[in-house]
Length: 383
Image (cartoon, rainbow, N blue to C red; front, side, top):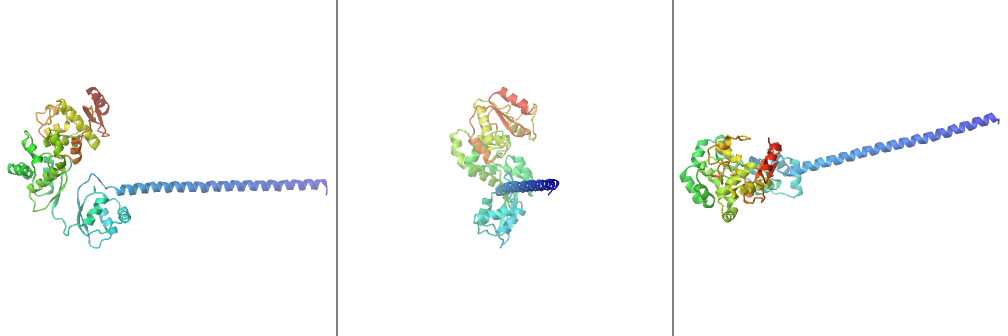
């Protein structure tokens, strides 16, 4: 073999080696790329699984809670004979009582809840699943409810309750106001509920002596029921709510009228139980030094108006309900307080706070021990 041929053979061998090395490198790159793609897909899949899991968890969690804790309006619901748990769940969802029929069905199955009864029920969106299940197991009525229902909202006044009755029934507001001020009726109610009503009927300068004593709830008002019977049901509910507190009120040297007055103010001044307790504490601090309560809620009641802010002219209104001018508790309650507001009034938070104001945009309440600090908060969050 000539030298030239040897050189060519060596060159070809090198080219083959280079090609083999290049192919191995490309395959390694391809494997690395495939591995990255697979890992990326797996990572994306895992992220999606986690995301869907979180969404599912949130959905189930919210579905287990009452649909709307603020909406206590009762809805008439009929459960037909032979309805399965799945059927009942769908009926409840269709009537706006629960959020998810599927979650309710699983909840019933997981807790081994059975023995649901057919019948006619009154459910509200504020009810928990446990309460709904309990009611379904107790059973409904054979016949659907033929009357109407009257909703007394928390923090509403007697005038507003009269408007509700006029809108919902054949009675006028004047019929309601006449019944609620009837002397014979009031005396009868005091005889039946002396612990609740004695201080109310002894009070002076009140617009309505039963203001604050009609407990906020939903009431059946069948055709055969009179206005007086409906009003007594509202008074009876308030007496039930207050029964456990009567000994505590006596020990405090305050009257039921005093407590419900503060509770009616607290009801409208604060929204959470924590804030209501603090606000009640502020009012008691003011009362302790004979400082006027200075609450807009009472002034608005005096004016018989509903607005967000009051003016300097408003706070000079000539009325015993003007608690910017008159010290003490005033004549009496200005609305029907909730159980939470009553509880806050009886269990106030002790503090040195003398002032408070609310940021109307956020709802947050700022408390101050001095008037100077109060003015700083006012300039920052209100003006």
